[in-house]
Image (cartoon, rainbow, N blue to C red; front, side):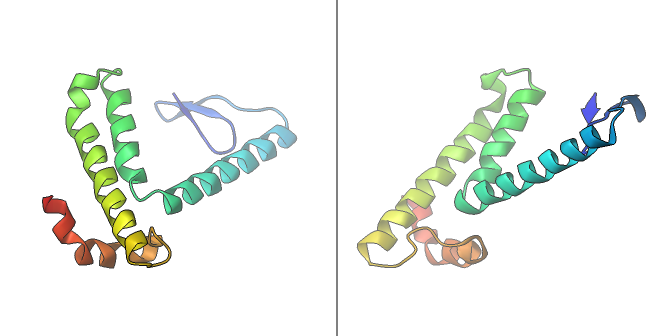
Length: 118
């Protein structure tokens, strides 16, 4: 069963339940928009957000069996380790911001690729 942005629930393409009141529908829509905005802010601040989400999705898919998601966890750890090294290096060299903005990350990855081998 899936929850839609207007607060209704859908199963196999059919609406199973939907809110009766327009006020409730509007409230659900607003909360969904707020959640998306908050998630986007977290995504911008955390360079390993996608890797973490992939690990969580793997856990959900495999009924929280951590053994089946070891690759995703290792990927998340490697990401965090890399960005920690980048942050430390930029701090030592006086480069601000210590963690680059989302738009700059691809260029920074190329610039600091040598840190991946450590």
